[in-house]
Length: 64
Image (cartoon, rainbow, N blue to C red):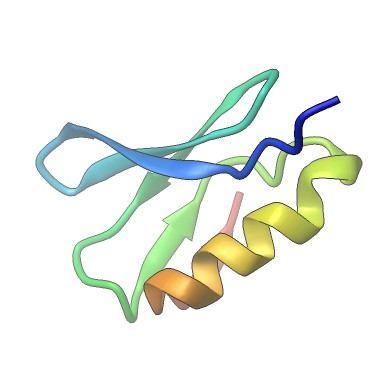
């Protein structure tokens, strides 16, 4: 089975999605140092999401 790496997809303006195999997690980023993640996703995708955020230099300040 091939490993899936989450990625960022632009939506509109400052709104993006983190795309995982089973869902799209909305993330609002007025800038990369003040991002608001709307959902944390499924537990088994957590490490990939954390790696993506680190690679992109995104700092989550709020999780809803």
